[in-house]
Length: 524
Image (tube, rainbow, N blue to C red; front, side, top):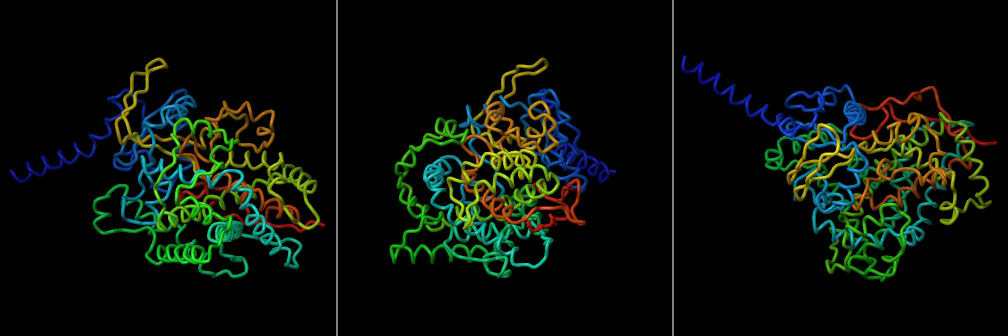
């Protein structure tokens, strides 16, 4: 009898501690959507019934007419912002309260991951951002554009060598190889042709590093998310020692050669080597056209740091740009290729603009690509419809109070280490901000219409000081490859193309369930 009593007492105690976290939002008068204890709001993702994009979109719609709502990631309470003005306050006006991103991995687990700009926190992040910012001005991008355009032209020429009238291409693989070659050239100073040399070390290592959705990658991230102490005890790593050694040794060898021979190259590595001593020149005062630049300068307190970048610091920054190019940017290209294939009228108009700007020798200048209005409209609209990252997040670094504005709201105080979710895809697909959001309408981003778009409802590269520092580079990669590709081919659907697109329910980003099989039809 005593044993049975102790059993029920232990069971009750276990249930109490298991379910107690789920009173968090109700005690604060914050609406929550349907969830399942232990799994939280992400239960449909765990059950394979919806992707992360579908999950955040569903939650956003269920919280219609609210400025925010509560959800649970496992047992961890998170606040989801659904009001553009609150996005502005969290990400810009009161940025010092929300400076950090969530830690995907504890410090000291993966050297390449922990030191990159995405993972750094607080003053370390602020200093690193100040050091790196001058390397990503428009003048620096102009200097690097020659490497981007060269690889984009080689990409198109590869498919021109085939004798087929229509070449069937798996674009996820093809664009991943293109972005690999661009980063190899523009970041490491290494010339690679991954479409021809399909098993080169650069591409193989990049594929391994970028495969976060592998069974092992998902296991490691889940382990650190739910059982961080146990995962850290066993030293679980996302990136193998061979991957870390490959990139670190490559960077160190290249840096050593350049320093010994006084080699100056206007690629990303060269710019980071220049920035390693905190060398800030006139580019820092260059006026940015980025809508977030003013907000960033107001909140970032840019200064002249005396922190000397180590080889490991530089390797970490280049590595994260490599990952971004391999996975995120290549996926954005795939989604744009898909949209052009299923919207031939848009593709035709874009081709006409390309013909107007194309030179006989296929040379593409930075000034040319920068002044192509319709190309910019199409890229912007594709990123609206398909932001690769469906949401971003911030961590509360100083207590913050949200004052009530709507009927039924009460004063809400967010504690330190509270997670705040900023939904990107739901804002992009909200009809009150973008009419007929399911349609591809590049004219939304015409010069006369763009000024009417609330910048806190459209942010494919994030928002505020912690927006993507490499967004200009990514946009140039996208624009260059489609300029060269569409100069010679029409992108068309094939019998294997899913129309409409079916999202991969196991992916944390926006991905197609069966890749992106499309055709390249040679132009007459």
